[in-house]
Image 1 (cartoon, rainbow, N blue to C red):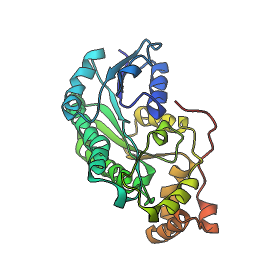
Image 2 (cartoon, rainbow, N blue to C red; image 1 turned 45 degrees about the horizontal axis):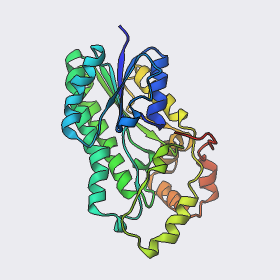
Image 3 (cartoon, rainbow, N blue to C red; image 1 turned 135 degrees about the vertical axis):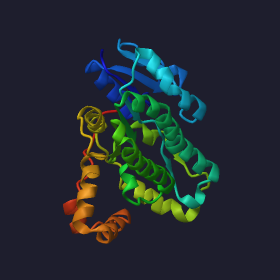
Length: 287
């Protein structure tokens, strides 16, 4: 029997690419989308079932494990990819925006993990991949709420890895670097515009326009599920993402922070430029 994977947030970006990769590798795939209009995007793939799921609905999330299992009779892996990007200074961000960011990126993800853990625990096998962000390891300005949510995903995953390893369940976290995906076209910005932040925010955004091909991250996602490695928890993708833990180890936390902070204010040192590679420009238009 072919293995089955469940992947959330598959209408575009990493999710869409990795669905196609697993389908090509002859896995059965249960792909989730948020909108009715996206339910047909994988109709050309015989071994993909596309289901509608709003990860903000915790009741639906908690029931989704058994629903997914019914599609092909088993589930072997889960990639929690669904999420969105909220940007802007914290001062201008409403508490409603903060709650919604955590609802999607953290609480919905937790509910989905809870839905599949009993299945994997009982069968004594399974792989869970939770998607965090390289920003969980760095303090970018104007993304503090987003990176707080992704830091929660990182810590959650490491705790889950420790809890579930004895049952044969492997839990991993992915920290992608700066990738050219549709997430930046759907950015929710801070509700209130505060004049003091406008110019420095625009300057910061202008420094971060070069992004890598998202296929790089899809390739890492595929490897995380299939490499059989039960020792590694954190995986990184992209030249910038992969460099962060190495440069942090080389410089130490404080020196790294000083260099990183200089860069975020538009004054990278020669040392930073020599150690930290830029994302690889991707000229392909992404859906």
